Image 1: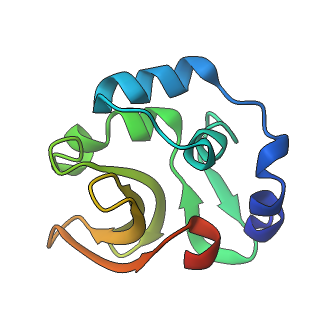
Image 2 (image 1 turned 90 degrees about the vertical axis):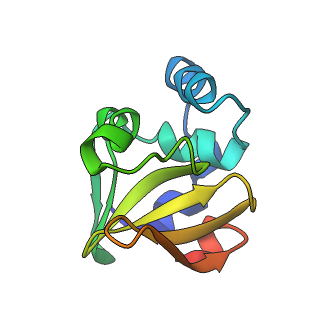
Amino acid sequence: MKLKDTLSKLSDVKIDTGFVVQIETMYGKSISDEIKFIISISNEAVFYDDFPLLRSLSHAEIIDASEDMAVDFIGIDILPLFDVGDNDYIVFDFSEKTWCKFNIVDEAKFSEANNISEYL
């Protein structure tokens, strides 16, 4: 699967309403349509041919991210969606309303962008 193709066809993805509600309840806020489409692409992790190190997180990994990665994602108001290797993740920062990379070891955000297509 190619990421660029996937992102260009996001509006064709059927939104997984149950999972969206679960995330919105966990974070206590509404999420954008772009995020709804991204998290609805697949229940399982997806690898992309055009970005060898990139993979989307599975639903279980998103739900269990704080526990599994020992980072309070909800407390710091960021939603991890993609693993890019070396303990770095592409996340949505709710407080800044931006996409960025986040390193789970240093708990540091970097490389901000206004939308996921711009970021990748």
